[in-house]
Length: 468
Image (cartoon, rainbow, N blue to C red; front, side, top):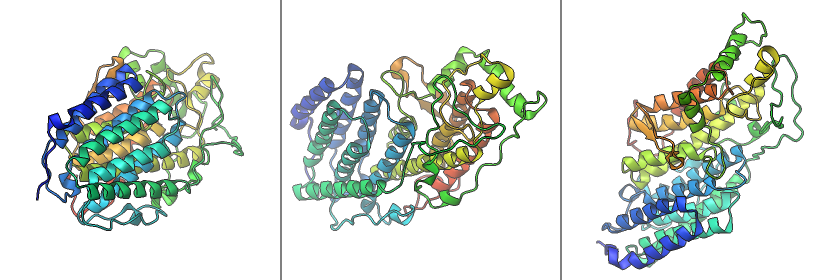
């Protein structure tokens, strides 16, 4: 049986109305984004859908629209959210998305059977659901509950986007099915949020005592802020293996001897920083992800935007999109967890501290040095495992990152996901905030972790290349 298709003239009025509402609520730079979202949703609604649908037959436009909206909201959030907290929050959203779609994936298992101390999720109790409606309800609820710094205008934009998708879905989904789907998505969101409140996540340094030894980390100029996240290692990760996983190998032995390997590693950064080329500065700036109006997206959003663009370009359906967002989210959350275990285990000083003490007291890094120990790299722990999930799914394909074209920067194109990750690592060397040996080890360590996440079996047969 087929239900009626959605025709352009039937929905033009309410679509235009919502576009007007959106553009009135957000800055002019965001209006093109919303028009694109509305038209994508409208065009997907014009297709006839067999019913009841399964998730691999439904488009993922709803998901892409929500992630794009969240990026726009966070781009203009003042002040930016705490980096680690924001990554953690976004990661729960990805898990919740998968759970809201999971019953519509034939033979798939819940992440509650894979993630550490994750409770059983609400069960789908009927065979007829719209998984797009479920995803829309879950994402709307999760983003409202988990994202910080939302203004009244942000909340109105979210309400409006949710309504646009609801109206499109109602036009070809029976009322009872739509209501059931929406209720299910919201129940998943509530369960995920409640679970998130028990993870003991704490970014404060209150009560933490800095260790003191030759080469130990100390607060860095210009603000000399206390360390961020020394107790993140005590929070609950997504994977039980993260609690006991091997730490990265011990970094180079600290030495102030000019003939030592450690001195040479610091001197390399000093020399690079004193002769940065325009291209090196562009690379450092592109991957810096400084949160704030017109500056850049907050940490965690940028890799998810790359995921979104890759999935959209390949016309990935809702089933596979939900699985990839979940795995990318797991990779980012536990990549941070494992990296912060390393940071506060080794407590290695930052290059600026060493260089100011041993080489040049007036030197400063091109990028501001973050307030936590150096080894290993937090930025690489976001990109290397999440890009490895994409690489294992689609192969090591060419990719173009358009994230910052809105501010006039040229897109950055790469021959492969691997080359993108290499540049991410190099960006911190050019920025003067990580030693090269740290970046090399961080790429290897986090790429291997990305393989672990990619290997999580959720569906009977993967869509990509299992043996890559």
